[in-house]
Length: 403
Ligand code: HEM
Image 1 (spheres, helix red, strand yellow):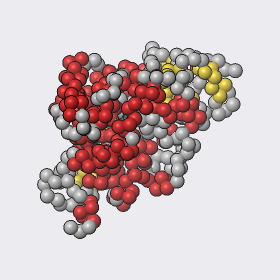
Image 2: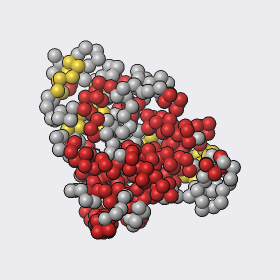
Image 3: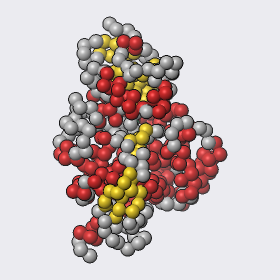
């Protein structure tokens, strides 16, 4: 049996810092090179100051996402970003399942119907003429989250200031911001108090506030939900501008799935091994992965693996007429830790896409840029193709019914 990480393939290293420099400057190229060098569906190694392995096969994804006692969140990347270091994200098995059970209620499909109308009403108007779909998606996600969580009552300037650092490259999102977080927590307490004393709210804060640690869950999930939603929405709008034949509400679900396959905002998930793990690679070898190893899965690599997807690098929403290969499509993760906000993200993005008029792509840079989340470099400048009164959203249903 092979017994060392040294035997795994790896991308070229740089003297003195292993893969750290490439990880910081061009992580997508680095992991694509690692995937290229690994045997089909196998693992590859990264030297990131501590031993790390990356896998993207269905078997690896399933193991990492379902064996929560071996693959722990403690010591993973989320811990170094104060925004994500709390609530369910900070909780490991066996405490994780009951904690999720508690917060799940507000985020289920049924509760989304309660939120739909106010999310739709919160969408910013579509600008006339030329506009940046990335900037619009950013304010749309901010407004929709404010509506779903707080019925629009959270101070918008503070919400913007709170979330803005997440969009910057490292180390900006990892810096502690005690004063800003204290202001956000004070605003959360003010709004929670209103709900707890009135006792009749049905927004997400009204459901989270009475729970132990509910305000922290609110703050952490807001941070997890903003850029992810913004980026998926911006890419979807950009693709609809390029492929107008898909711009109809009945196609938007497939468009969103295809966007999330090619550009999963959660491009890399991380865990730490709580024990030594023997792993059988597809080429028949057995590798011993030592306890403490950083174990990574990548929705980005799995979503583009040519062994799993036909014409993997092409935008083809029609592929979603069939089910995806098992454990290959993971834009929301999987297993017990699957994204808490998956249904909320669908609600917000599909409502926003329905509001979009026919668009023409003008210019922009849609290159994926990895940070805490994967986003388009931007801007993504489009033009509204149909006139509508300034300051009002475009309503597809109105147009279709000819009113
Ligand atoms: C398109 C939008 C979104 C994408 C692509 C996305 C992606 C993901 C992924 C990949 C994970 C799993 C991470 C892992 O395994 O380490 C995750 C977890 C999570 N997401 Fe999302 N997310 C999105 C929107 C949201 C929204 C709107 C919320 C707001 C509630 C949210 C809250 C969370 C939370 C709290 C977790 C941690 C769950 C746990 O550990 O139990 N996400 N998300």
